[in-house]
Image (cartoon, rainbow, N blue to C red; front, side):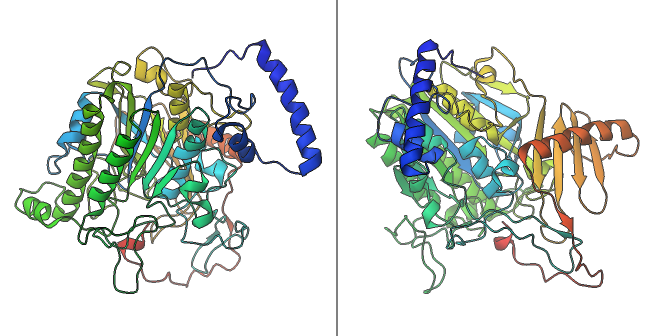
Length: 520
Protein backbone atom coordinates (compact mmCIF):
# COMPACT_ATOMS: atom_id res chain seq x y z
CA UNK A 1 0.00 0.00 0.00
CA UNK A 2 1.26 3.46 -0.81
CA UNK A 3 1.83 5.42 2.37
CA UNK A 4 2.52 9.04 3.21
CA UNK A 5 5.67 10.04 5.06
CA UNK A 6 3.60 12.59 7.02
CA UNK A 7 6.51 14.98 7.83
CA UNK A 8 7.00 16.77 11.11
CA UNK A 9 4.80 19.71 10.20
CA UNK A 10 1.88 17.29 10.11
CA UNK A 11 2.57 16.53 13.79
CA UNK A 12 2.15 20.23 14.49
CA UNK A 13 -1.12 20.20 12.59
CA UNK A 14 -2.18 17.15 14.58
CA UNK A 15 -1.59 19.03 17.82
CA UNK A 16 -3.55 21.98 16.49
CA UNK A 17 -6.29 19.61 15.38
CA UNK A 18 -6.51 18.08 18.87
CA UNK A 19 -6.96 21.53 20.40
CA UNK A 20 -9.56 22.54 17.83
CA UNK A 21 -11.45 19.28 18.24
CA UNK A 22 -11.46 19.63 22.03
CA UNK A 23 -12.79 23.17 21.70
CA UNK A 24 -15.47 22.09 19.26
CA UNK A 25 -16.45 19.23 21.56
CA UNK A 26 -16.93 21.60 24.46
CA UNK A 27 -19.15 23.95 22.51
CA UNK A 28 -21.03 21.50 20.29
CA UNK A 29 -21.03 18.44 22.53
CA UNK A 30 -20.74 16.18 19.53
CA UNK A 31 -18.91 16.10 16.22
CA UNK A 32 -18.99 13.15 13.87
CA UNK A 33 -16.11 11.88 11.81
CA UNK A 34 -18.04 12.32 8.59
CA UNK A 35 -19.17 15.85 9.48
CA UNK A 36 -15.56 16.88 9.98
CA UNK A 37 -14.50 15.33 6.70
CA UNK A 38 -17.26 17.36 5.03
CA UNK A 39 -16.27 20.62 6.71
CA UNK A 40 -12.55 20.05 6.19
CA UNK A 41 -12.58 18.83 2.63
CA UNK A 42 -15.94 18.73 0.91
CA UNK A 43 -16.32 22.49 1.05
CA UNK A 44 -13.14 22.82 -0.98
CA UNK A 45 -10.60 23.38 1.82
CA UNK A 46 -7.07 22.18 1.20
CA UNK A 47 -6.68 21.05 4.82
CA UNK A 48 -7.67 17.51 5.78
CA UNK A 49 -7.60 15.65 9.08
CA UNK A 50 -4.11 14.20 9.54
CA UNK A 51 -5.42 11.22 11.44
CA UNK A 52 -8.16 10.48 8.99
CA UNK A 53 -6.95 11.71 5.64
CA UNK A 54 -3.27 12.41 5.11
CA UNK A 55 -2.63 13.64 1.57
CA UNK A 56 0.21 12.12 -0.39
CA UNK A 57 2.53 14.36 -2.42
CA UNK A 58 0.43 15.79 -5.23
CA UNK A 59 0.69 14.07 -8.60
CA UNK A 60 0.97 16.18 -11.77
CA UNK A 61 -2.59 15.29 -12.70
CA UNK A 62 -5.08 13.32 -10.68
CA UNK A 63 -6.68 10.58 -12.78
CA UNK A 64 -10.37 10.46 -13.49
CA UNK A 65 -11.98 7.40 -11.89
CA UNK A 66 -14.70 5.36 -13.60
CA UNK A 67 -15.96 2.45 -11.48
CA UNK A 68 -18.40 0.24 -13.39
CA UNK A 69 -20.32 -2.16 -11.15
CA UNK A 70 -22.66 -4.65 -12.85
CA UNK A 71 -25.41 -6.23 -10.75
CA UNK A 72 -25.35 -10.06 -10.57
CA UNK A 73 -22.84 -10.51 -13.40
CA UNK A 74 -21.35 -14.00 -13.19
CA UNK A 75 -17.67 -14.93 -13.47
CA UNK A 76 -18.08 -16.52 -16.92
CA UNK A 77 -20.63 -14.04 -18.31
CA UNK A 78 -18.05 -12.28 -20.54
CA UNK A 79 -16.26 -13.44 -23.64
CA UNK A 80 -12.89 -12.61 -22.09
CA UNK A 81 -13.81 -14.81 -19.12
CA UNK A 82 -14.85 -17.79 -21.20
CA UNK A 83 -18.44 -17.31 -22.38
CA UNK A 84 -19.14 -18.72 -25.84
CA UNK A 85 -22.76 -17.53 -25.91
CA UNK A 86 -22.80 -13.95 -24.60
CA UNK A 87 -21.15 -11.33 -26.83
CA UNK A 88 -19.12 -8.64 -25.04
CA UNK A 89 -16.62 -7.17 -27.55
CA UNK A 90 -16.28 -3.80 -25.78
CA UNK A 91 -15.56 -5.32 -22.38
CA UNK A 92 -13.21 -7.82 -24.02
CA UNK A 93 -11.26 -4.89 -25.53
CA UNK A 94 -11.16 -3.26 -22.10
CA UNK A 95 -9.54 -6.42 -20.73
CA UNK A 96 -7.08 -6.55 -23.63
CA UNK A 97 -6.04 -2.98 -22.87
CA UNK A 98 -5.68 -3.54 -19.13
CA UNK A 99 -5.41 -6.19 -16.42
CA UNK A 100 -7.80 -9.11 -15.98
CA UNK A 101 -8.15 -10.51 -12.45
CA UNK A 102 -8.93 -14.23 -12.49
CA UNK A 103 -9.37 -14.55 -8.71
CA UNK A 104 -11.44 -11.46 -7.92
CA UNK A 105 -14.15 -11.73 -5.28
CA UNK A 106 -17.23 -9.83 -4.22
CA UNK A 107 -17.22 -9.06 -0.49
CA UNK A 108 -20.52 -10.93 -0.20
CA UNK A 109 -22.63 -13.32 -2.25
CA UNK A 110 -25.49 -10.78 -2.30
CA UNK A 111 -25.49 -7.13 -3.26
CA UNK A 112 -25.91 -4.54 -0.49
CA UNK A 113 -22.98 -5.78 1.62
CA UNK A 114 -20.67 -5.73 -1.41
CA UNK A 115 -21.81 -2.25 -2.40
CA UNK A 116 -21.14 -1.01 1.13
CA UNK A 117 -17.69 -2.64 1.03
CA UNK A 118 -16.87 -0.97 -2.31
CA UNK A 119 -17.79 2.45 -0.96
CA UNK A 120 -15.92 2.17 2.36
CA UNK A 121 -13.10 -0.40 2.08
CA UNK A 122 -14.59 -2.26 5.06
CA UNK A 123 -15.72 -5.85 5.24
CA UNK A 124 -19.52 -6.16 5.55
CA UNK A 125 -19.09 -7.79 8.97
CA UNK A 126 -17.40 -4.64 10.27
CA UNK A 127 -20.15 -2.43 8.82
CA UNK A 128 -23.12 -4.46 10.09
CA UNK A 129 -24.48 -4.70 6.52
CA UNK A 130 -24.28 -8.46 6.00
CA UNK A 131 -27.42 -9.07 3.91
CA UNK A 132 -29.33 -7.19 1.25
CA UNK A 133 -31.17 -4.16 2.66
CA UNK A 134 -34.92 -4.60 2.77
CA UNK A 135 -36.72 -1.68 1.24
CA UNK A 136 -37.25 1.73 2.76
CA UNK A 137 -37.04 0.94 6.48
CA UNK A 138 -35.12 3.85 7.95
CA UNK A 139 -38.00 5.96 9.27
CA UNK A 140 -37.03 5.55 12.94
CA UNK A 141 -33.43 6.66 12.47
CA UNK A 142 -32.20 3.52 14.24
CA UNK A 143 -30.94 0.15 13.10
CA UNK A 144 -32.78 -2.96 14.33
CA UNK A 145 -31.25 -4.64 17.38
CA UNK A 146 -33.31 -7.79 17.88
CA UNK A 147 -32.19 -11.14 16.52
CA UNK A 148 -34.63 -12.56 13.99
CA UNK A 149 -35.85 -16.05 13.15
CA UNK A 150 -38.82 -18.27 12.47
CA UNK A 151 -39.97 -21.51 14.03
CA UNK A 152 -38.60 -23.55 11.13
CA UNK A 153 -35.06 -22.12 11.64
CA UNK A 154 -32.70 -23.69 14.16
CA UNK A 155 -30.92 -20.38 14.56
CA UNK A 156 -31.75 -16.78 15.24
CA UNK A 157 -29.87 -14.44 12.92
CA UNK A 158 -28.34 -11.08 13.84
CA UNK A 159 -30.26 -8.07 12.54
CA UNK A 160 -29.04 -6.45 9.36
CA UNK A 161 -28.55 -2.70 9.20
CA UNK A 162 -31.16 -0.70 7.33
CA UNK A 163 -28.59 1.55 5.66
CA UNK A 164 -24.90 2.36 5.25
CA UNK A 165 -24.14 4.70 8.14
CA UNK A 166 -23.50 8.30 7.18
CA UNK A 167 -20.46 8.35 9.46
CA UNK A 168 -18.69 5.98 7.07
CA UNK A 169 -16.37 7.86 4.74
CA UNK A 170 -17.11 6.85 1.14
CA UNK A 171 -14.92 6.94 -1.95
CA UNK A 172 -16.95 9.90 -3.18
CA UNK A 173 -16.50 11.90 0.02
CA UNK A 174 -12.77 11.29 0.07
CA UNK A 175 -12.29 12.25 -3.58
CA UNK A 176 -14.27 15.43 -3.08
CA UNK A 177 -11.65 16.59 -0.56
CA UNK A 178 -9.17 16.87 -3.44
CA UNK A 179 -11.46 18.51 -5.95
CA UNK A 180 -13.22 15.66 -7.76
CA UNK A 181 -16.68 16.04 -9.26
CA UNK A 182 -18.69 12.96 -8.28
CA UNK A 183 -21.60 11.18 -9.91
CA UNK A 184 -23.60 8.05 -9.11
CA UNK A 185 -25.76 6.48 -11.82
CA UNK A 186 -27.95 3.41 -11.37
CA UNK A 187 -28.39 1.09 -8.43
CA UNK A 188 -27.51 2.15 -4.85
CA UNK A 189 -29.47 -0.13 -2.46
CA UNK A 190 -27.77 1.20 0.67
CA UNK A 191 -30.71 2.76 2.46
CA UNK A 192 -33.72 5.01 2.08
CA UNK A 193 -33.92 8.66 1.10
CA UNK A 194 -31.89 9.96 4.07
CA UNK A 195 -29.04 7.71 2.92
CA UNK A 196 -29.15 8.17 -0.85
CA UNK A 197 -25.91 8.85 -2.80
CA UNK A 198 -26.30 12.63 -2.53
CA UNK A 199 -25.99 12.20 1.26
CA UNK A 200 -22.82 10.13 0.82
CA UNK A 201 -20.63 12.45 -1.21
CA UNK A 202 -22.09 12.38 -4.72
CA UNK A 203 -22.78 15.69 -6.42
CA UNK A 204 -25.08 14.02 -8.93
CA UNK A 205 -27.41 11.09 -8.27
CA UNK A 206 -29.32 9.58 -11.17
CA UNK A 207 -31.43 6.60 -10.12
CA UNK A 208 -29.66 5.70 -6.89
CA UNK A 209 -32.31 4.86 -4.30
CA UNK A 210 -33.49 2.07 -1.98
CA UNK A 211 -34.46 -0.19 -4.89
CA UNK A 212 -32.80 -3.58 -5.21
CA UNK A 213 -34.12 -3.91 -8.76
CA UNK A 214 -36.02 -1.75 -11.24
CA UNK A 215 -39.76 -2.31 -11.59
CA UNK A 216 -39.12 -2.45 -15.36
CA UNK A 217 -36.17 -1.95 -17.70
CA UNK A 218 -38.27 0.08 -20.11
CA UNK A 219 -39.19 3.75 -19.74
CA UNK A 220 -41.22 4.85 -17.74
CA UNK A 221 -39.53 2.16 -15.60
CA UNK A 222 -42.63 1.06 -13.74
CA UNK A 223 -44.87 -1.96 -13.67
CA UNK A 224 -48.57 -1.23 -13.75
CA UNK A 225 -50.33 2.08 -13.38
CA UNK A 226 -49.89 2.18 -9.59
CA UNK A 227 -46.13 1.53 -9.53
CA UNK A 228 -43.71 4.44 -9.48
CA UNK A 229 -40.65 4.56 -11.69
CA UNK A 230 -37.08 4.94 -10.41
CA UNK A 231 -36.49 7.89 -8.04
CA UNK A 232 -34.01 10.34 -9.50
CA UNK A 233 -34.38 9.04 -13.05
CA UNK A 234 -37.55 10.59 -14.47
CA UNK A 235 -38.97 9.12 -17.68
CA UNK A 236 -37.97 10.90 -20.87
CA UNK A 237 -38.74 8.61 -23.82
CA UNK A 238 -41.28 5.82 -23.63
CA UNK A 239 -39.78 2.42 -24.25
CA UNK A 240 -36.15 3.56 -23.79
CA UNK A 241 -34.06 0.77 -22.31
CA UNK A 242 -32.70 1.53 -18.84
CA UNK A 243 -29.11 0.44 -19.54
CA UNK A 244 -29.02 2.72 -22.60
CA UNK A 245 -30.38 5.60 -20.52
CA UNK A 246 -27.72 5.04 -17.84
CA UNK A 247 -25.01 5.08 -20.50
CA UNK A 248 -26.38 8.31 -21.97
CA UNK A 249 -26.29 9.97 -18.55
CA UNK A 250 -22.72 8.74 -18.03
CA UNK A 251 -21.60 10.23 -21.35
CA UNK A 252 -23.23 13.53 -20.40
CA UNK A 253 -21.47 13.66 -17.04
CA UNK A 254 -18.06 12.82 -18.52
CA UNK A 255 -18.47 15.40 -21.26
CA UNK A 256 -19.51 18.11 -18.81
CA UNK A 257 -16.55 17.46 -16.51
CA UNK A 258 -13.87 16.80 -19.11
CA UNK A 259 -11.69 19.61 -17.75
CA UNK A 260 -11.77 18.63 -14.06
CA UNK A 261 -11.01 15.35 -12.29
CA UNK A 262 -14.16 13.29 -11.86
CA UNK A 263 -15.39 10.12 -10.21
CA UNK A 264 -18.17 8.26 -12.01
CA UNK A 265 -19.80 5.35 -10.19
CA UNK A 266 -21.63 3.60 -13.03
CA UNK A 267 -23.74 1.04 -11.13
CA UNK A 268 -25.99 -0.58 -13.70
CA UNK A 269 -29.22 -2.16 -12.50
CA UNK A 270 -28.62 -4.87 -15.11
CA UNK A 271 -28.29 -7.82 -15.17
CA UNK A 272 -30.52 -8.25 -12.13
CA UNK A 273 -34.09 -9.47 -12.45
CA UNK A 274 -36.61 -8.82 -13.91
CA UNK A 275 -34.98 -10.51 -16.92
CA UNK A 276 -35.92 -8.12 -19.73
CA UNK A 277 -33.97 -7.37 -22.88
CA UNK A 278 -34.37 -5.33 -26.02
CA UNK A 279 -36.45 -7.22 -28.56
CA UNK A 280 -33.92 -7.20 -31.39
CA UNK A 281 -31.16 -8.54 -29.16
CA UNK A 282 -33.41 -11.22 -27.67
CA UNK A 283 -34.26 -12.36 -31.19
CA UNK A 284 -30.57 -12.45 -32.09
CA UNK A 285 -29.70 -14.77 -29.19
CA UNK A 286 -32.76 -16.92 -29.70
CA UNK A 287 -31.25 -17.92 -33.05
CA UNK A 288 -27.73 -18.57 -31.70
CA UNK A 289 -26.55 -22.10 -30.87
CA UNK A 290 -26.88 -22.70 -27.15
CA UNK A 291 -24.14 -23.65 -24.70
CA UNK A 292 -24.51 -24.23 -20.97
CA UNK A 293 -25.52 -20.54 -21.06
CA UNK A 294 -28.72 -20.36 -23.09
CA UNK A 295 -31.10 -17.69 -21.80
CA UNK A 296 -31.57 -15.37 -24.80
CA UNK A 297 -33.12 -12.55 -22.78
CA UNK A 298 -30.33 -12.58 -20.22
CA UNK A 299 -27.80 -12.63 -23.07
CA UNK A 300 -29.49 -9.53 -24.50
CA UNK A 301 -29.09 -7.79 -21.13
CA UNK A 302 -25.39 -8.67 -21.04
CA UNK A 303 -24.89 -7.25 -24.53
CA UNK A 304 -26.68 -4.03 -23.56
CA UNK A 305 -24.25 -3.66 -20.66
CA UNK A 306 -21.41 -4.20 -23.12
CA UNK A 307 -22.79 -1.46 -25.37
CA UNK A 308 -22.92 0.89 -22.37
CA UNK A 309 -19.31 0.17 -21.47
CA UNK A 310 -18.38 0.78 -25.08
CA UNK A 311 -20.05 4.19 -25.06
CA UNK A 312 -18.16 5.24 -21.92
CA UNK A 313 -14.81 4.08 -23.31
CA UNK A 314 -15.49 5.72 -26.67
CA UNK A 315 -16.35 9.02 -24.98
CA UNK A 316 -13.10 8.93 -23.01
CA UNK A 317 -11.21 8.36 -26.25
CA UNK A 318 -13.02 11.11 -28.14
CA UNK A 319 -12.30 13.61 -25.36
CA UNK A 320 -8.64 12.50 -25.12
CA UNK A 321 -9.21 11.35 -21.53
CA UNK A 322 -8.25 7.68 -21.82
CA UNK A 323 -4.64 8.13 -20.73
CA UNK A 324 -5.67 9.94 -17.56
CA UNK A 325 -8.62 7.77 -16.57
CA UNK A 326 -8.55 4.72 -14.30
CA UNK A 327 -11.39 2.38 -15.33
CA UNK A 328 -12.47 -0.40 -12.96
CA UNK A 329 -14.99 -3.03 -14.05
CA UNK A 330 -16.53 -5.37 -11.47
CA UNK A 331 -19.67 -7.15 -10.23
CA UNK A 332 -21.40 -7.17 -6.84
CA UNK A 333 -21.77 -10.95 -6.57
CA UNK A 334 -21.84 -14.14 -8.61
CA UNK A 335 -24.38 -14.87 -11.31
CA UNK A 336 -27.92 -15.89 -10.40
CA UNK A 337 -28.43 -19.54 -11.27
CA UNK A 338 -31.30 -19.95 -13.70
CA UNK A 339 -30.81 -16.88 -15.88
CA UNK A 340 -27.10 -17.76 -16.22
CA UNK A 341 -24.71 -20.63 -15.59
CA UNK A 342 -21.43 -20.15 -13.70
CA UNK A 343 -19.68 -23.39 -14.69
CA UNK A 344 -16.99 -24.46 -14.05
CA UNK A 345 -17.74 -22.74 -10.73
CA UNK A 346 -20.18 -24.33 -8.32
CA UNK A 347 -23.61 -22.80 -7.60
CA UNK A 348 -24.29 -19.05 -7.83
CA UNK A 349 -25.53 -15.92 -6.12
CA UNK A 350 -26.13 -16.29 -2.41
CA UNK A 351 -24.12 -19.49 -2.01
CA UNK A 352 -20.75 -19.79 -0.24
CA UNK A 353 -19.26 -21.59 -3.24
CA UNK A 354 -17.16 -19.88 -5.91
CA UNK A 355 -20.15 -19.31 -8.16
CA UNK A 356 -21.62 -17.06 -5.50
CA UNK A 357 -18.60 -14.91 -4.71
CA UNK A 358 -16.05 -15.07 -7.56
CA UNK A 359 -16.60 -12.30 -10.10
CA UNK A 360 -15.08 -10.87 -13.30
CA UNK A 361 -12.82 -7.88 -12.70
CA UNK A 362 -10.86 -5.69 -15.11
CA UNK A 363 -8.73 -2.60 -14.52
CA UNK A 364 -7.49 -0.32 -17.33
CA UNK A 365 -5.16 2.63 -16.83
CA UNK A 366 -2.97 3.35 -19.87
CA UNK A 367 0.63 4.03 -18.97
CA UNK A 368 0.22 2.45 -15.53
CA UNK A 369 -1.36 -0.95 -16.15
CA UNK A 370 0.27 -3.17 -18.77
CA UNK A 371 -2.11 -4.01 -21.61
CA UNK A 372 -3.14 -7.66 -21.81
CA UNK A 373 -1.86 -8.50 -18.32
CA UNK A 374 -3.49 -11.15 -16.13
CA UNK A 375 -3.36 -11.34 -12.33
CA UNK A 376 -4.26 -14.42 -10.28
CA UNK A 377 -3.77 -12.82 -6.84
CA UNK A 378 -7.02 -13.06 -4.83
CA UNK A 379 -8.55 -9.58 -4.55
CA UNK A 380 -11.80 -8.25 -3.11
CA UNK A 381 -14.35 -5.44 -3.27
CA UNK A 382 -12.78 -4.00 -0.12
CA UNK A 383 -9.69 -3.14 -2.17
CA UNK A 384 -11.31 -0.47 -4.34
CA UNK A 385 -11.31 2.39 -1.82
CA UNK A 386 -7.61 2.13 -0.92
CA UNK A 387 -6.75 1.66 -4.60
CA UNK A 388 -8.67 4.75 -5.67
CA UNK A 389 -7.19 6.76 -2.79
CA UNK A 390 -3.66 5.73 -3.80
CA UNK A 391 -4.34 6.69 -7.41
CA UNK A 392 -5.68 10.09 -6.36
CA UNK A 393 -2.85 10.82 -3.92
CA UNK A 394 -4.75 10.15 -0.70
CA UNK A 395 -4.41 7.82 2.24
CA UNK A 396 -7.64 6.14 3.38
CA UNK A 397 -9.06 7.20 6.77
CA UNK A 398 -6.94 5.75 9.56
CA UNK A 399 -9.21 6.10 12.59
CA UNK A 400 -10.89 2.81 11.71
CA UNK A 401 -9.24 -0.26 10.16
CA UNK A 402 -9.48 -0.39 6.36
CA UNK A 403 -9.84 -4.05 5.43
CA UNK A 404 -8.76 -3.68 1.82
CA UNK A 405 -5.33 -3.09 0.32
CA UNK A 406 -4.35 -0.85 -2.54
CA UNK A 407 -3.99 -2.86 -5.74
CA UNK A 408 -1.41 -0.42 -7.11
CA UNK A 409 1.55 -2.82 -6.61
CA UNK A 410 -0.29 -5.40 -8.72
CA UNK A 411 -1.45 -2.86 -11.30
CA UNK A 412 2.03 -1.39 -11.69
CA UNK A 413 3.63 -4.83 -11.68
CA UNK A 414 6.18 -3.87 -9.04
CA UNK A 415 4.97 -5.55 -5.86
CA UNK A 416 2.58 -7.82 -4.03
CA UNK A 417 -0.21 -7.54 -1.48
CA UNK A 418 0.66 -7.96 2.19
CA UNK A 419 -2.30 -10.11 3.19
CA UNK A 420 -2.57 -13.83 2.61
CA UNK A 421 -6.27 -14.41 3.27
CA UNK A 422 -9.76 -13.11 2.43
CA UNK A 423 -12.89 -13.52 4.57
CA UNK A 424 -16.68 -13.55 4.23
CA UNK A 425 -19.53 -13.58 6.76
CA UNK A 426 -23.18 -14.23 5.91
CA UNK A 427 -25.05 -14.98 9.18
CA UNK A 428 -28.44 -15.33 7.48
CA UNK A 429 -30.74 -17.86 5.88
CA UNK A 430 -31.47 -17.61 2.17
CA UNK A 431 -34.14 -19.67 0.43
CA UNK A 432 -34.44 -23.35 1.31
CA UNK A 433 -30.84 -24.54 1.20
CA UNK A 434 -28.54 -21.75 2.37
CA UNK A 435 -27.87 -21.53 6.10
CA UNK A 436 -25.68 -18.98 7.93
CA UNK A 437 -22.01 -19.33 6.98
CA UNK A 438 -18.55 -17.77 7.12
CA UNK A 439 -15.62 -18.35 4.76
CA UNK A 440 -11.87 -17.95 4.69
CA UNK A 441 -9.66 -18.31 1.63
CA UNK A 442 -5.94 -18.53 2.41
CA UNK A 443 -3.74 -19.22 -0.59
CA UNK A 444 -5.22 -22.15 -2.47
CA UNK A 445 -7.29 -23.29 0.51
CA UNK A 446 -10.90 -22.40 1.17
CA UNK A 447 -12.85 -23.29 4.32
CA UNK A 448 -16.61 -22.88 4.62
CA UNK A 449 -17.97 -22.87 8.17
CA UNK A 450 -21.71 -23.41 8.53
CA UNK A 451 -23.58 -22.64 11.68
CA UNK A 452 -25.99 -25.53 11.28
CA UNK A 453 -25.87 -28.88 9.48
CA UNK A 454 -22.54 -29.93 7.95
CA UNK A 455 -20.08 -27.93 10.01
CA UNK A 456 -17.15 -27.55 7.59
CA UNK A 457 -16.23 -27.94 3.94
CA UNK A 458 -12.62 -27.67 2.81
CA UNK A 459 -11.48 -27.25 -0.80
CA UNK A 460 -8.20 -26.83 -2.62
CA UNK A 461 -9.08 -24.31 -5.31
CA UNK A 462 -5.83 -24.83 -7.23
CA UNK A 463 -6.83 -28.42 -7.96
CA UNK A 464 -10.61 -28.18 -7.63
CA UNK A 465 -12.08 -24.88 -8.82
CA UNK A 466 -15.49 -26.55 -9.07
CA UNK A 467 -15.40 -27.49 -5.35
CA UNK A 468 -16.36 -31.09 -6.01
CA UNK A 469 -14.09 -32.79 -3.46
CA UNK A 470 -14.60 -31.88 0.20
CA UNK A 471 -11.34 -32.50 2.10
CA UNK A 472 -12.58 -31.57 5.58
CA UNK A 473 -12.69 -35.11 6.96
CA UNK A 474 -9.33 -36.15 5.52
CA UNK A 475 -7.49 -32.96 6.59
CA UNK A 476 -8.68 -32.07 10.12
CA UNK A 477 -5.48 -30.16 10.95
CA UNK A 478 -5.97 -27.80 7.99
CA UNK A 479 -9.60 -27.31 9.07
CA UNK A 480 -8.50 -26.38 12.60
CA UNK A 481 -5.83 -24.03 11.28
CA UNK A 482 -8.19 -22.15 8.96
CA UNK A 483 -11.04 -22.16 11.46
CA UNK A 484 -8.79 -20.54 14.05
CA UNK A 485 -7.95 -17.78 11.56
CA UNK A 486 -11.62 -17.34 10.78
CA UNK A 487 -12.52 -17.13 14.47
CA UNK A 488 -9.85 -14.48 15.05
CA UNK A 489 -11.09 -12.43 12.08
CA UNK A 490 -14.71 -12.60 13.23
CA UNK A 491 -13.67 -11.28 16.62
CA UNK A 492 -11.49 -8.53 15.15
CA UNK A 493 -14.28 -7.20 12.92
CA UNK A 494 -16.98 -7.42 15.60
CA UNK A 495 -18.99 -9.82 13.46
CA UNK A 496 -22.32 -10.83 14.94
CA UNK A 497 -22.92 -14.58 15.04
CA UNK A 498 -26.19 -16.55 14.89
CA UNK A 499 -27.70 -17.88 18.12
CA UNK A 500 -29.78 -20.89 19.01
CA UNK A 501 -33.53 -20.52 18.49
CA UNK A 502 -35.48 -21.65 21.54
CA UNK A 503 -38.69 -21.56 19.48
CA UNK A 504 -37.36 -23.93 16.82
CA UNK A 505 -39.94 -26.53 15.78
CA UNK A 506 -38.57 -29.36 13.60
CA UNK A 507 -42.09 -29.99 12.31
CA UNK A 508 -42.55 -26.40 11.11
CA UNK A 509 -42.39 -25.85 7.37
CA UNK A 510 -40.78 -22.88 5.66
CA UNK A 511 -43.03 -20.56 3.64
CA UNK A 512 -43.47 -21.12 -0.08
CA UNK A 513 -40.48 -19.97 -2.08
CA UNK A 514 -40.80 -16.50 -3.54
CA UNK A 515 -40.00 -15.65 -7.15
CA UNK A 516 -36.47 -14.88 -8.26
CA UNK A 517 -37.23 -11.18 -8.48
CA UNK A 518 -37.30 -11.16 -4.68
CA UNK A 519 -34.21 -13.31 -4.36
CA UNK A 520 -31.88 -10.40 -3.72
